[in-house]
Amino acid sequence: MMNLSSALVYFFLGCILTPVLHGEVFSSIYKLKLLAKKEENLLRILKQYNDSLVRGTTNNTPVSDMRLFAHLESSVNISCRDESYPENPLNVLHLLNRYINMWPSIPDIVLCDSCAISERERDFNQSYHNLKKEITDWPKQHELQAAVRSFLRLRTTYYLDISKVIQGNINEEKTEPLSLSLIQLIIKEAEYIKMWDEALLWSDALLDLLPELTSTNISTTAMFIDQIKARILHKASFTADAADLLKIHLKKVGVLSIQEDYTKYKKELKEYPKKDVPKMWPFNEQELDSIQKQLCRGVIRKSNKELSSLSCYMVETYIPYFKSKAEEVNKDPKILIFHEVITENEIAYFKEESYKVFIRSGLQNYGRKEDVNEEIRLSYTGWVFEKDAISRRISKRIGMITKLDTTERNVLSSSESYQVANYGIGGYFKPHLDNLHNPIWRQPVQSDAKFVKGSGDRIATWMFYLNDVRAGGATVFPRINTRIPVTKGSAAFWYNILPNGEVDERVLHGGCPVLLGSKWICTKWIREEGQMFRRPCKLHFNATVH
Image 1 (cartoon, rainbow, N blue to C red):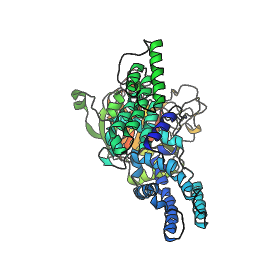
Image 2 (image 1 turned 60 degrees about the horizontal axis):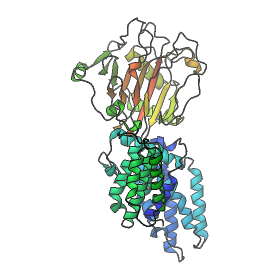
Image 3 (image 1 turned 135 degrees about the horizontal axis):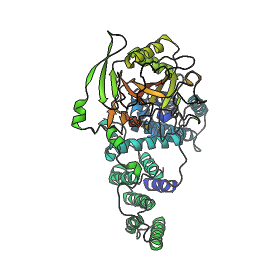
Image 4 (image 1 turned 60 degrees about the vertical axis):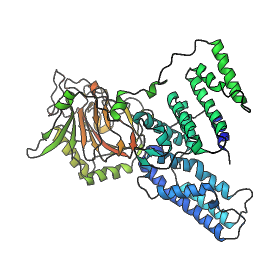
């Protein structure tokens, strides 16, 4: 087995190139739960094979004598039985890592060159490959890398303690500690996406925890970690610091690559003495603490005066005896949370219907193809059409509360169908506006669906929250310092278009990354068609909710 220092050398050499990523499975808790369940079958056939070796009289070494089997058995017994297992980002990394780096090595161990190949080995090999074919969503390496990037987003958004994370602790939830290979991958991905500070912080944490990770070659391993840190400093234009870091290792034996790096850095300093820039922290804009990140963490950015003006009240609807519970989260523009507006059965309906048509979320770019970009949006979505009494009843309820027309017709609909989205670990949506720059008085966009073609822009947004999230996932409005926490059974509502027809730029909003748990939302966008007597045009900008 490769020792720790050798592993770091290969890691160092492999850090230079990384493919472009487009994650799939990791971005959906639903699919991750299926993977965790299917892993139980892999463990079952491995255990059957191992038990047959123990009972038999073969010269082959039982797989149970290997630490790999013990690790798989312990981890899979937990993952396949715990429904909430994939709702922890560390568990997601472990699950994907097992599929990508552990399970594929088992057939090579069973069918090793020095092992006797009998009927039981052939049966195991056949069973393994049959199961692998059945698992159509078997993860790929790029998905583990993309999951690591999502995890880095969580780390920098919620200021997670790296030392605690390595030991398997997030928000006081304890799970399996990170392995050395996963820590290496985290450093590699942070470096690749130019999160220099993050890569250095993880490298320092790895140095601090080396005595716990290994009892041999600690000094050699530390030396290679310093080499990685020096390369990161050099890439971040702190070449003098990189050279100083390597200087203390120059007299050690067997460090030719360190000597070469040191010579390279000194040569660059001599040729470009003014290359280094003044010290700044962080090195990269991605790691700056933005307003959005503060709101995601629950930092209150409104003044006491603003907060004291907000209230809760009963909103009158079209039916006199029916009122709805409303909570103000912002005065101007008016943003409301309506509580207890969807039932458990209706929530189950939306989930079940969307399961059937789930795809990776895209961005609606009118006049262009839909864009699937994990740097902007990370979730799975499914559209639920108004084809039965349940969906039509819910639409009428939304119209009754908002006093807007929400009718879905064959042509010129007043609202779109329901978009159900499932955000998994690290799932998020960067700040954006919901409007389509397609007002009702313009020529209809040809790429629009037939039933909403010519229906105008999205005048308002209604967003159901279909579950509670253990940590993260809030909806935030960075331009108006507003945060909407995820509360099951409630719905957020705001106008995207001002009464005079202009886009309200203040309602720029985004979905915070999910830290623990899974986030389900169901959105209905209400169009301009049919609203002329419901929300008459005005010359001023007061966008109130009736």
